[in-house]
Length: 230
Image 1 (cartoon, rainbow, N blue to C red):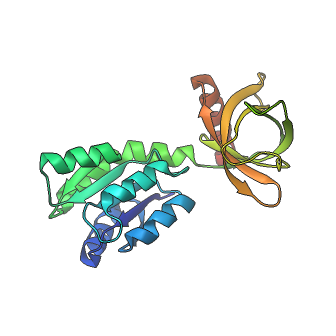
Image 2: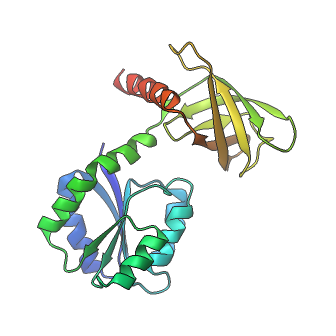
């Protein structure tokens, strides 16, 4: 499965250059010159890594990085800033916004290959967090606050990062919930804290795990890997 990369730069020539460099490295590239449109896309679609130009009209790379860091699905992705400005102030502003790495222009194939190889482990880890496996089982969802209401939901799928549930219409975006469910071949009941990040009409929700112990993460990872290989 290819690594999904998004590249935003107002120069079409730069976009084509980056595509030609990273696609042979096992990456699927979505490229756009529209930084304002990109801000909407990252709120709705998951990427494993994102390249942003520092200086663009309408929404610049620093503003776009802040949008990415506030999005439910992409807030932990590695973000590479493309810039011809390697002064300390640009780097300070970039790191403050949430940039992971800088790549100076002009971009060379050697530097791009070195960067992607250095990031590969992080990119694959980010991809693995969102690999979803069908999971049909009852899930108890208890609000952490606002009263004792419990939703007896049904699982749809699960990833290392979260779950999709149905029959949970009484939960709203932003609610923190304590989840309890049973994974096949795991004797202990899973007890996790999660947050509702989206509604899926008519009665579904998507939740993101907030607190996941190493044992719980490993149990979910083993379940997903067994299912993916079967």
